[in-house]
Image 1: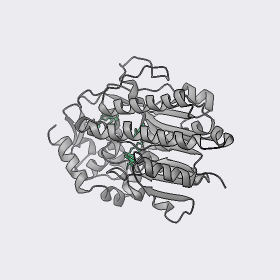
Image 2 (image 1 turned 120 degrees about the vertical axis):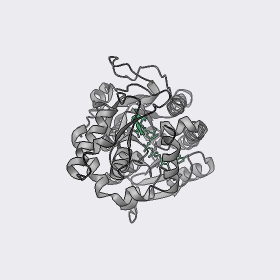
Image 3 (image 1 turned 90 degrees about the vertical axis):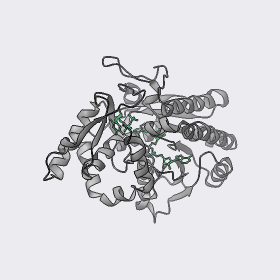
Image 4 (image 1 turned 60 degrees about the vertical axis):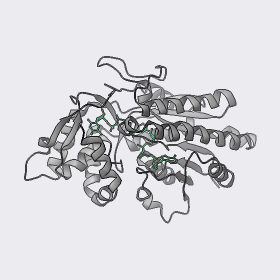
Length: 354
Ligand code: NAD
Ligand code: TYD
């Protein structure tokens, strides 16, 4: 029987996409997720009757639980998506990011190492620990700077980015010190179905549909490089399959857009798909106080993954964004269900004082 993959954070936005893709490829999956505010079992609804999928609610920092799962399920790979993932929350509560992203990842690494050391030589050779990281570890680019490469020195600016940078360094250190076969992927901003509506694109869609202001931080000129979540997960699968242990791989969409441009594009799509009698959605765009330490621009140079592993993004930003807007319109129940009291409290905390 094919050995399973342990996917942590598999009930979140990107992790759930990866769980679904891995099951579609016929690989059994063990999902471990704490189900924090952004974890959502509804994201895995289609696997409810799938005997090839096991879900366990738990913390990557719970060494006893993780060691038990490794011993009993014997995965051939661990893919670590579990993280606190939102920059604005990290500004208000950095400790939560240290707990999961730094301490949790370190505990997961220790369990993975002990498990890997217990495997026979051929299982050891085939085993991989893939850590999913972000372009934000590299810091901020000016308008004309070349894109980040895998050699760009780390210079994280937010507590979120700093916690991810720390976890990347620890993953790398477990390779150098103990020989654990690790891989790191650093990806740009993702968009697509099932993204929690605290991040820019789903927040814009959610607010537009609620006829609420569309908050743009600062001048709206900050640039992000957007990649569809399906393409990100396909890249991770490719790195897992053929990446060189100890290496990191940049992943990006070659789709740099200013935030205001993204907001206008979302509004134009909504005008077409769900026109409103009160007028164009762009009328709701509102400039608000900037994010402290707001990185100006991210851009990824993906030559390594393209030339070494033959990966290419398949979605264009225009078609991917249209498909994403349609997904949120077609899945109003999903959007409504994630807007708990805690979510409304977050909107109040983050936006009322801006
Ligand atoms: P998300 O917030 O939607 O999902 C995170 C998941 O991790 C949730 O299901 C949550 O319940 C789970 N989790 C949190 N703490 C946990 C813990 N201690 N133990 C077990 N599970 C825990 O985030 P996402 O956007 O899907 O991001 C997933 C990963 O990808 C993160 O590591 C993030 O840093 C990275 N990443 C995200 C982006 C992006 O644009 N969203 C880009 C590059 C990299
Ligand atoms: P976000 O989706 O939080 O991702 P990240 O900070 O990881 O890049 O934000 C994307 C960009 O959108 C970022 O430059 C901040 C900006 N932004 C706004 O202008 N308004 C908002 O309400 C949010 C959430 C983000």
